[in-house]
Image 1: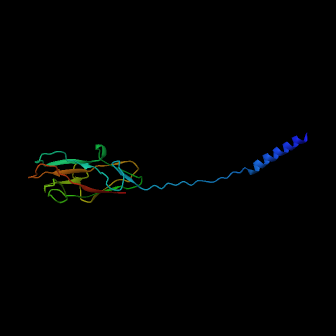
Image 2 (image 1 turned 180 degrees about the vertical axis):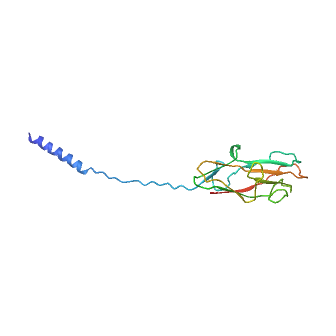
Image 3 (image 1 turned 90 degrees about the horizontal axis):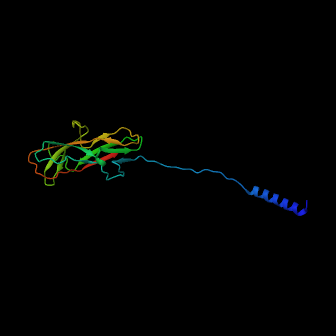
Length: 177
């Protein structure tokens, strides 16, 4: 074998061995984390204040009505909807209204802004036999992570001498979980 072929062959082998000796592999890991906190949505909205728990409308009645029934409706015209993290126990507390105790015949009152009041109450059943007191609580079953429907009803009671007008009230609500 000619010398220059031998030298080339030896140089090539040395180069190949040198490349193998310099190649290395390093292994390791990547740590990934995610922390989830319990949360709830009311009628599809989230946040910690200013949520809309729904509307209780008694419709339009004449000034001589005796009783008017309504239901608290959330978004989309259906009953109030509460969606909470799985494993939580949601509890709704219906707090004070702006005109509580202003009119006999109910614990709450709708006002026309001119000193006239229509008494009303909240109820937890469609027959309106189970009143929900001021600061009353509705405890829902342990959440499975799907929305739960909350049925809350109202009944307003007419009384003599009520002038025509729009009567309103605003009631505070808290959701704990």
